[in-house]
Image (cartoon, rainbow, N blue to C red; front, side, top):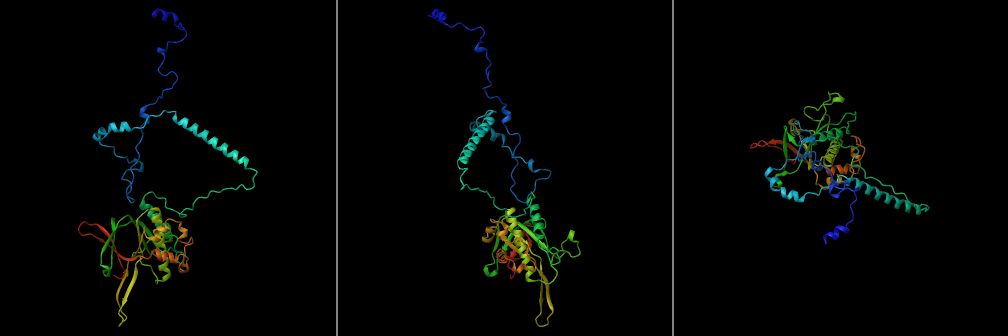
Length: 361
């Protein structure tokens, strides 16, 4: 039987190489890549969990790395990672995906042109114009850190409010809620008639301070006065204009800083008590008040979801026009939480608190 098979076998071609001597991949059909090239070249930066915390000393934003797992944890989960690893892909897969996408795009364009040619003579063809939604505001802060962005908001907003002589109404400073360089917590002390309970507000708060400008400082480099008290006789118009400025500061902070509360410390008001019998001054001092805005308040929650121009008029009013401004009722509603305030330090751990309470006690 073996001899018959040998006689009937086809003679080998001396020009054809032995298949057993061919290279394992003669046509380049097997994927070739360096497995090390599939590994990420750099680790992603760690996320920031606090609005006001800047990068560490000598550390750039992109230098932070995600901590690697402990060796024993990595060894224990090595089998699971290997089992769930994604299959390796050829280095040419991206090219095929690109070509396939191009062919599909050409096909879609051809279909569109075909129907356009059929309907080209129709007079009922309409042009559709795509419109983008309006921006929330014409201006927005560009700073990276929360503290710098809050100061940008304070500078921008305060420059829109002026006195009749075109001097700026007040100077505004912004940043995190703090006292003597210490982070502060926000506390509300309810009136004694309501039980006198103390409520601590959770979340992240921004703080702005409005201060009168020292009249002796040049306009180009205005400086706050020592007492922050506004000169001149108090008026309803001035109080309304300051209140509108506080509302604008709060809305910018909620929109671009994402804070939970905004506290605006208003310029102190001179308070003078006189003896009704003699007319003499018996007590002369100042009253420090603050406006509290909370993100979840109904009016605020609505204002930060629609363009700012729908809440406050585009033209900033003046002392002469603020009482007739179309947004006056909105300002009064949003700035209705007025408190007397004081900062205090805890005697136990030295923590700082901003205590808000009713101006009447």
